[in-house]
Image (cartoon, rainbow, N blue to C red; front, side):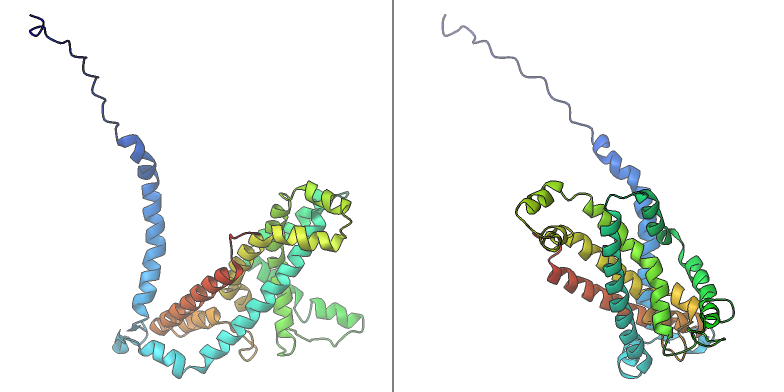
Length: 310
């Protein structure tokens, strides 16, 4: 009878319902339309450029259109001296502009980071040029460099220089003139990013350094600069890419002149496509420019050890 007694089995635990997959997918469903739109606006132009770089495409000469293979790229590296001239000037332009903008931006950030009367107004004045559009910036400096009503007119009134001199038409002065114009717009970019990073530096580090007898320069060199490393690397990389692709300011001020002295590679691409209507060759130039920027960015990030220990 004891063996016949049934052993009570524990009740089965209630079956857990499978969690609905909808809540987990909801964020992706919400951002999906925006992501598709961004992908379309970005991917399609990029793919189109790569496609047309392998084509002879000129709407004004349709009888010459067709597949070209790598002929456009061969022409770039073997038959086009303007490509090398504009590439050299682009490198010079980026190096000078980014270097000077970083130097002045760092100095301005250190100044407006101090406590003084009217600091809020000073910061607003320092950062205001960055809020001005590129077209408006170009218009401002076109007026300032006007030979009849601009800076040269007032300098001539003071006995400095001659009347009717145009800095933008002289090959010896055009480069410094456009550099100064772009500095006015680009320096605030570095000042904003560096100042934002300066706000996170602990005051205790400076107080400890002062107790140890460290000078202001040693505090800057051993505390401030290491802390700003990543901000400086990122800002210089972003600004280098933007300066390399700068078209609006140079096109408005000089149009690439005089005598091609201020023609960057992107400006050469714009002239080839818009003025000459040679979209196939311009697409090949754009592809080469993209690869150059990609390679230089990867090397720069690798050598600078971005994101590593400070």
